[in-house]
Amino acid sequence: MRQTTPFASLFTALIAILASAAAGNAQCVLPYVLTNGTTPDATQVMANFNALVSCLNPGGAANAVQYKASAGSLGGIGPLGDGQLGVGSIGNPPQSATLTGGSGIAVTSGAGSITLATTIATTGTGLYRQVMSATPTSASTGLANWLNQGTAAVSDSSVGLSINAPSAASLTLRGRYVAAPAAPYTITALIGATRNGTAASGVGIGWYDGTAKLHVINNTANGGAAVFQVTKFNSVTSSAGNDFASAANAFPPPVWVQLRDDGTNVSFAFSYDGANFLPLFSVAKASGFLGASGYSNIIFFVNPQSTGPTLGTLLSWTQS
Image (cartoon, rainbow, N blue to C red; front, top):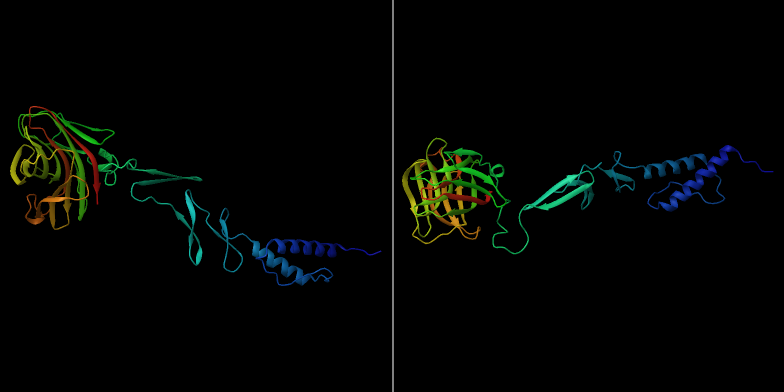
């Protein structure tokens, strides 16, 4: 009677495992081919076993995503962080990458989740939807500092940031300002003005030197058709005249206004479509009303100067 030793049994088991693994994993190349009737050799069996282990050994750290490496073994990317994805790269192993949003798209990543959301209105075919910012607030615009607040009030609503200024017997600017960014930059705003006074009242944006003087663009109405003015102010209660004053072309708000500082010149412009702007006034900073270093703050303001209160609203605010 033929006897089977434990050593022979082990070889038989290994041969069976290797044969099964090789059949199910054609990409794993074994150095020796063992067929039925072949006398098992420990060196050959162990070489095949080690080749199989090397081929099937997971690549990368724990929780890595596996892929077939160029040498035929397994490679790994990761482990991936919250919201990361495996992204293809022609001629190279896949890469781990984080999904980022384009214009108007916010990406929020969590454990095993990615959430995409719009940050601007995208429904319908409204005139302004391609150029509107997210709803402006005191925090998002940085317009958190009062200039001559008095009894004026600021609020953030579903349409934007608003300054509500009571009527005033004479020129009295009230506004919110923020430090200007480093040049070059462009500030583009859509402003609304709600008013019912019988004397001049204005709403606009511009520059404030941080001490007293301002250089601004106003949408102003004086009991009749609204006009544009680029105005200089010695203080919140004293005008130094206009650099530009339009004819009574009835520029009713909401209307787009724009400030630009290219490092050498500052300029003012307006638009009714938010994309194409007409320049109103430009001057070299060195010779501008506020001086080379005076264009240091951006301000959104209301100038009631009328027998009724004036409400100014920022409907859109972008910096580029």
